[in-house]
Image (tube, rainbow, N blue to C red; front, side):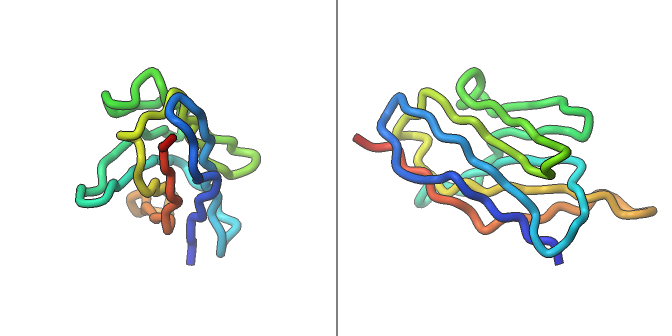
Length: 120
């Protein structure tokens, strides 16, 4: 069973930076697409950014220009570089990795989440 695992969360001051990573465990399969979501207390989970198998990226308006999603196919790892962090970015961040299945649609798997807290 594939299980994505996030790392890199923590406490950072406003204006600071963090890089999140996400790697699948439980299988040697390689993901073909990835995305980051976040959920702040009392809010629904929201999409942050996504990247396709070809490397095309998309971002939510609230993070456009501040966050950068990328992937390293050789390391089978998804990243989220977060710059100019604001208190509004405080949330649990979840990665979602998509794996191809022969003759079937890509199947997405969720990570367990990593806490990001932006506070002085």
